[in-house]
Image (cartoon, rainbow, N blue to C red; front, side):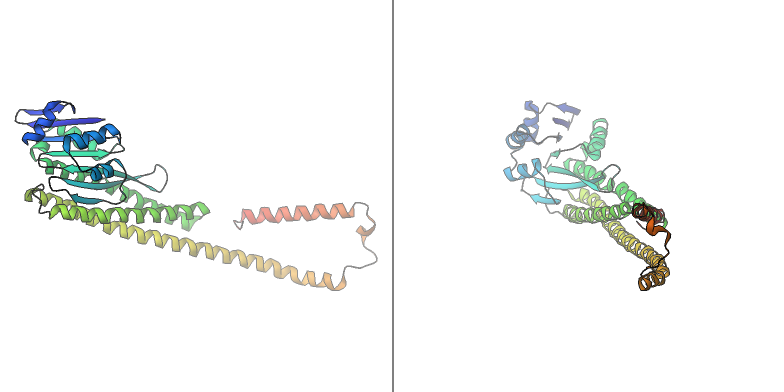
Length: 322
């Protein structure tokens, strides 16, 4: 779906993407235009190429998937790739949300494959408040990227709470699922850092860009976004260290539990060793043994062995050794 809004001297107006007014606004450079696309179709590719004249490589990147945030300067416009992150429901992993922006002198084109909170919020606000458009296309781009970065903070808080929960679980009763969750969180913190660091560099370039497409007064706002990303990177490093510490704690607790199990098993083995030694020396070859002439002695012995093995296995499981 393609939707567009323009703000000119007469106010805010929704624009049909196929209407001549859109091409006229681009040609004259009047007002501020925002076009949002949320699909990767041939129609959208043709729209970006024919109406805006974007480079085919930029269109290919926008409609595809770019692994790392980046900023490309094509002279007449800037192509920006930014990433947001979201938690995968009840899992401890992260889901990457890609946002592509084309920033021109009087227009902003955004493209995303999935619904984005930052796009929805800023779009709804911009339809009610002209001040977003009055700040220009670079001001719109700042508003979108600023909220995209702010949306990383709940992810950080959620990961921090998960690590605290895992630490309590480790000290109480760690299981194999605990280890899986620790590794998932550790992987998520590394993923978070791999996203935040290159995105920090992109915003840094926007805050010191010599291109006339980002005005000096808007560069000041991008510096504030840069500061937020520096904080995100610092927190992600701390979370990564906490996850590594939780892993070490888990391994220590499991090792201590294993030592306790070995102590118990060693004690049981030690008790039965002299009994086994005596039985081995004498061979149990006594003349008067009640079970020697018993018809069901062999079957009865197998039954006793099975019951003993099952009872020991149940006892080990109850104690958490199995």
